[in-house]
Image: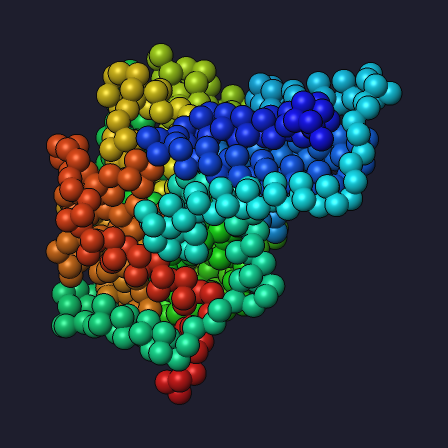
Length: 622
Ligand code: GP9
Ligand code: MN
């Protein structure tokens, strides 16, 4: 057959390959997932386009055109979901998240607020092709090839596609060994091998670890984890051990409370005057980073109460509520405390009712236990929540550990009943996401002020250690230029500055202000539990964090592979180690031990959670 006839008969297939290829590339460009190694990305995208085309190359002329339109639609849908998801979570989706789609749909107002009409452009070509197909279908005169020819065509397309994709995967693995297995940086994977290859890979990983059964650890690997933890958590007559025994413990997780709020003035007014005042009498963590991943609020809750890290995809709360944990509430209970968790949302959200039982809380006060008498944002206002919480806490058996989770400062920071309109004038930021956020943060700060007053009135303040910290970021990456304006008065923000802005507020107030001052070392959410445990007089053998009051230097690892030390950090998305003071790039090769440390922490945390190792270790001990 002549090349020309062959080509003419393959116009649809060639068009399909080109459309998918360019679509994938445009996706990467729009999410800023392209760097000087773009050739691997191109190879990967072409590879996946060829693999997809091979599937349709088998059909009869009409059915293959139909199939390709459907195929284009499915690919577009995946890209669409990734674009929207990325806007909030700053990441791409993964199969394991399907289980959580129901949860995501529950935060409807934030989902709809994330959609932009321009997102529909992603489907433009599908609509055009569909239109052309309906109008022109009688004219489709593609030759129906012989089966043997189709088979050859299928095999060559699939083979070539596979080879190209494999090549990009290989290059990625060479550059970041283990990444396709741990998926610690999914966007980096997309950057190197393209979106579709990533999803195929992700699907394969999910099936192989969840359906074809996970590769459970060998006895030796389990022992290695145990030895690593024993070595890491051995204690040597620490300071402050048991000093807070008998005091109540009140931990307040504040929704999306970023660190830059503290002591920041806008238009001459403080955003968080109450917390600023409290900070003067508290132990304040100046360099405290959130470590949450896909589980958002639930990850923060998990890290604080277990000193472990979030899982690779999805949320621990949803996927591992059946495990045994050596949690903060369990240990407090073991020390004679009454334990309660308070959050005025539906009990099924984030699988909380299951997980709170597992973590060992005596009581879960959900929305069903509160009067929903005042709304702000997603639900009960923080002011009403705190008021009712103090009412409940004053009747709890003493001593108690209560864990409170706020809600009012949740994205998209909308005003309910003009509560926020005149709360603070944000000047040039009025009407922007950041402006709305500042207003809602000011509201939560006021609520915290009232909360402290109420605790004082009830005589709880001086008998309690009170911890405040933010759960995760508030401002998505697509707002980075406004963030630059807010923090540095310019429209740009460097990579380092952006990562430095990913701190959250964190402080502990002690009875009689026994311990106060500023912790300058880098700290993370996983350091809270070991620090508290020491103060209340018990050990945490499975913690990944450290007791901040008894160690000198910090090390914080994030789920995406970023690690932060007191003087330097690794920025995964630009693949650079930088000096935190000067911003200067350092030689990556000089920090292999830091990379190893970060990798070991993630591996240990995953090992424990995926294999329910705490139960295993506890059984082995008894
Ligand atoms: C829901 C609230 C929000 O109860 O905790 O969770 P988030 O969307 O921030 O993960
Ligand atoms: Mn949250």
